[in-house]
Length: 382
Ligand SMILES: [Mg+2]
Image (cartoon, rainbow, N blue to C red; front, side):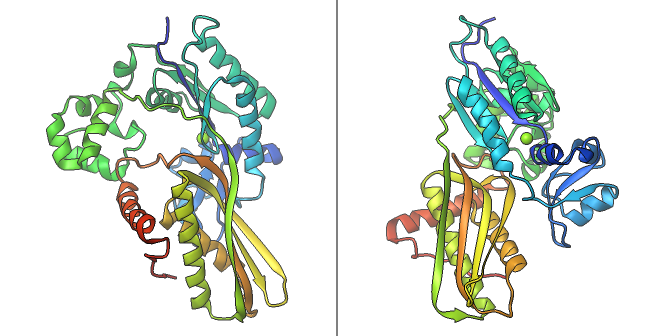
C-alpha cells in the first residue's frame, strides 16, 4: 500500500505525569494529578487512572479531588519538562526527514515519498520504539494521509498505541465518531451542532454547506471539510527558539499593588503581542520580582498547552505574581518571560472556545501594527 502523502503524528501519553513518574517511580500505577495545590489551582495534567473518574485537564483542582479523592497531587514545575521534551525532539531530529514540534509533547513527521524505499509503517514503528527506549517515556502514534487523520488516529490508539489509517480509509475511519473527536471542535460548537441534529462526523460531512456557513461563518466550511477527512495543511519545519522576555526597573521603589499589577498587565500584553507577531506560542510563563534590597525571586508555571492568547498568559502571570509577591517590601523591578517557544499558532479550540478571542486579538494586533504597540491597552483586573 503506497501513501501518496504520509504524515505521522506522535503524542506523548500524559507527558507531565510520565515525567514525574520517571523521577518518582512510586507514582507509577497510581492516580496522579499535576497542578496547583492551592484553593484556586487547576489541573494541568492527569493520569489515565484519574480520567476514569472524570478528571480532566483545566478542571478546578477542588472538583478533581471531589471526583477522585485518592489522587496524588504533584505541583507543576517540579521537574524539568522541557529537558525531557528536548530528549524526544532529539531522537526525532536524528531520524526524521521533516518534522514539526506542535507542542511540548506533540510532533508531526512528514514521511511522504519514503514508502518505496523502506515503508513508512515500518519506519514509524521503529521511530516510536526508539523514542520509548531512549527516553523511557510512553508515546502513542498515528499514521495517515494528513495531519488531521494522523492526529485522530493517535487519539484512538492512546495510550501506548500505534495506529495506521490506510489511504482511502479516512472517511470510514472517522464517520461513526461523534463530532467532538475532530480536533478543534469544542463543547460550544458541539451544542450548536446538536441543535442542527448533527451528532456524528458523518452527519456533519453530509450536512448542506450553506446552512453551516450561515450558522458558523467560514468555520462552517472548514469544519465540514474536516468531517470529510480533508486536510491539506503542511508540516512546517520546527526551528525552536528558546525564550523572550521583558522587564521594567522603576525609578523609585513601588509599594502600590495596583501600580504593579498595571505594569505586569502591560508587560504581559506587550510580550504576548511580540509572540503573535513572530507567529509563535509558549508553554511556560515565568515572573521575576526584585525588591528594594535587591533580593530577586522567580517563579514559573507550565501551561497545559501552547498558547499566545492574552487571557491565558495574563491569568498565569497574575497567579504567579500573587504567589510570589511580598507586600511588606517595596519592589524595584518586575519581569516576565515566556519559555519553550514554538513556531505556530495555537491549534486548540479552532472552531469555538478560542476563536472569539482570536478574532478580537487579530483586530487589536491590526491596530497595534498600524499605530504602534501602545496604541491600545488592556484594563487591569485583579
Ligand atoms: Mg500528550
